[in-house]
Figure 1 (spheres, rainbow, N blue to C red):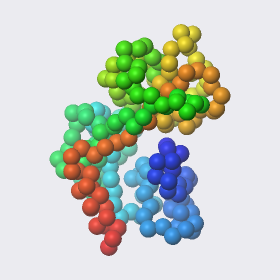
Figure 2: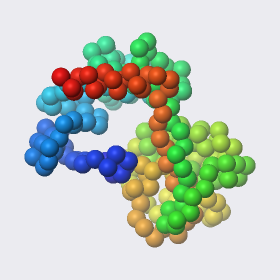
Figure 3: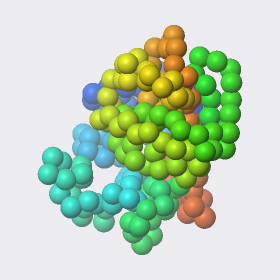
Figure 4: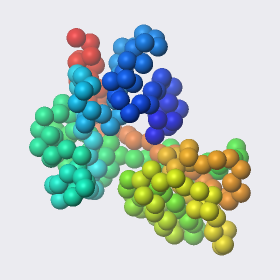
Length: 219
């Protein structure tokens, strides 16, 4: 994820177990106006001016329990305290006043080669889909909605994928997310296609959210 953030934003990214240490490293390296902490709500030692909670629209708050009994990192009541709630995907869960962002396919490219395609080029074809992300089913369903016949291979989130995880006897094309692609070493012989995703705000919610953030950081 840090690699993808650095690539897409071209901003300086620091990774550290201590978010306070990471913030200090950013402040000490160059002039910084805004620090965005990914997955930072639980790092209470880090001061913050604006909090955004991100909720998957399919899972929602699940059974309402925190890890390990449920999917939540903090009690659901925490949503009443944050400055904004961002709901991802087109699932049924939504909260009044929340902003929705929908994943879209930004492009499909073959790893190790300068070859780009579209998902439509694979419509009607049988493919393998490998995912080591938090919600592999969303990735698989997205491929199926584009007309692909998907053979699912779900791994735990942040799994260390190996070459054997992408080699299948039938030699069918293999699809994976960018998040998994950055963990692979070069030289893999399999036909692997990386699906680049981007999130687009639904309606005018994104503009409202950005306006609120700019208003806070401009004070």
